[in-house]
Length: 227
Image 1 (cartoon, rainbow, N blue to C red):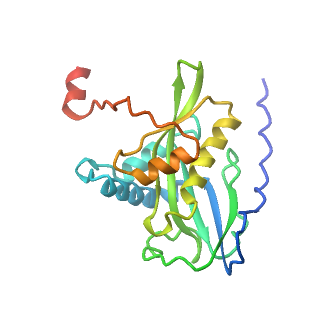
Image 2 (image 1 turned 45 degrees about the horizontal axis):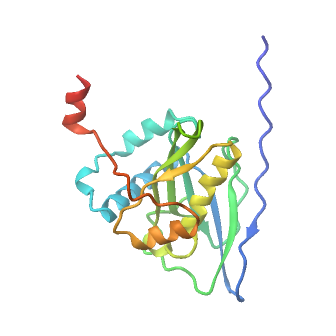
């Protein structure tokens, strides 16, 4: 049987300007795209920043090598998937992108430029494109709904870019993909002391369930139960 012809590559998403409340003189171009192998060092640093924020650096054992090995074997949306959020003061140049996902581009209008002390560390493409944050998610299954879903394992926006709408961009991107694939729900966890994040998620319409506890079987207990 002849192989089926590959689907046509999608065209880049049109640039969509966010609503302006007043005249701004510092437009910032924002793009969400699928991660590629060159993003692994950035992903590794971002996950470490999350471990620092959650006071769990003692549990951080991931390496660039282990992340690269996992992501290189993962089919987007069928296994571990990472969205990269990056910004630039200039329009993004035309470039090749994963045919499985059309990058989402928006313009955020700011009153003042963002002072990024880690700009050099998180340079992405060229001199003016910088990685701002990421979302790492995996497929799940919702037995009560009889539908698949997504579970967001990690979502992070770097500190100097917080409270500017970037977190909502990432959550919305995952939600949009779930809707496109006709999935039933997107789940994630939030640290109970992170009151601002809880209020933000609730404002987006998410339901926070205080009656559930997270159970983790790892390390020696995992090995003991697995033998």
